[in-house]
Image (cartoon, rainbow, N blue to C red):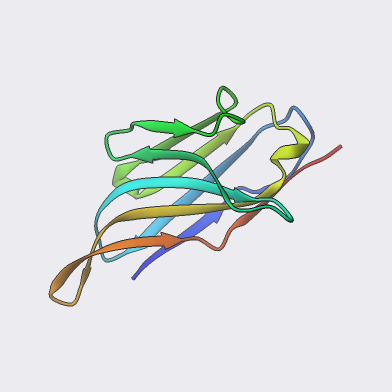
Length: 123
């Protein structure tokens, strides 16, 4: 199995910055894409940013220009640099990774989720 562990969440004032990290571990052959999602109270989980193995990126319109996603392929780690934070960015942020892993004698596709990290933007 592939496990993801997020870190870096916390409380920050509007206009401040946070850097989230997510490290993947397990019987990983390759990670094709990693992404950050978020879910605010009473709302559906939404895609925030996604990055592929060739470092192509996509962002939600609401965060474009403020957030930057990056990855360290050697460490199987994805980061989300969040600048100019707004109260509406408050949510639980979840890391996702998709790729290929080993399962006994076979190669299998996986899509794994972290437990989430709370980001609260408030004065």
